[in-house]
Image 1 (cartoon, rainbow, N blue to C red):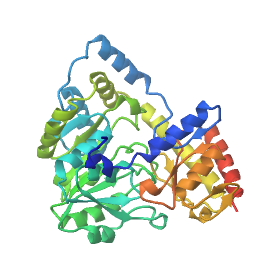
Image 2: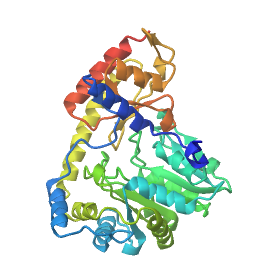
Image 3: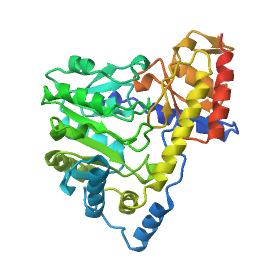
Image 4: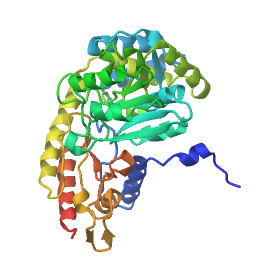
Length: 397
């Protein structure tokens, strides 16, 4: 008798991974698919980082590492937080994990009890509500539409907080929208949170360096909430190191100790060689980070311009990350041939099957009126993908 746990049955499968798989299946059949469904840089890991990994292998960094990561890597992260963010942490306040994804999950698992509420602004990254459910918590969704640049207001936050609220998950720059909270906006949210000392803030800053408006702002800079902020970051997006799987949390020492206890029981420390590569990423030249950021900014300008030329597609002007999150509900209720468009998922499937472009429907991001496209691909691919999308959408009646 195949009886899976209730915990597993509560979870939804990852829509982004599912769409990526479908596009790979079409590619395997010889169809020329442009994949805009995946959230990863299309650049290779910079050479000096790869060299550090090769050196680590030669130097026999092949044994178990400490659960929170090597001291050298944690020291490098402490220096990064000081130099780039003006934030003071000690190595004991850092815990490294197998990617920022595990770091977010670790923070949720050590804080959330059954029945606790966790506020998740929508649009959200697909895994946040699922992780909350995995911890037996209740996700409380605050919707923020394109009219407010997909960012929640202090009044919305205040209205969502109850005596059961345990945490707020804040992602800036945002996946899936590319929206970035300014210092003033974060300060206003921090003011609200000051009145509710039981609420922790999980600040997902993984897209920190893919930012088109200047300096990244962290909510941890505000003293009135700092002791309740758990920063999550890592090397995957900024350094094109998605497969290396290194993320970290920086936060109050008692929370980090709890994360180490949890991680000690189910994964132990992250990959030894990847840690040495990450150390080189943080301590070496930052020139490749800026080169990649400039390329993403150029692509952002290109895709926004092309999207605005498509009738019925409404777009914001993303200020970070590498996603466009257009509002596409103008196409709902239309059809072409045997394709009927009832929702964003239908539209994404139509664009894949007819336009041969893979995007992801917005329902699993908490925004059923939108689709997500990643522009972490070449300028040529962006131009061709948007041409195909425009053509396919024009056929809908």
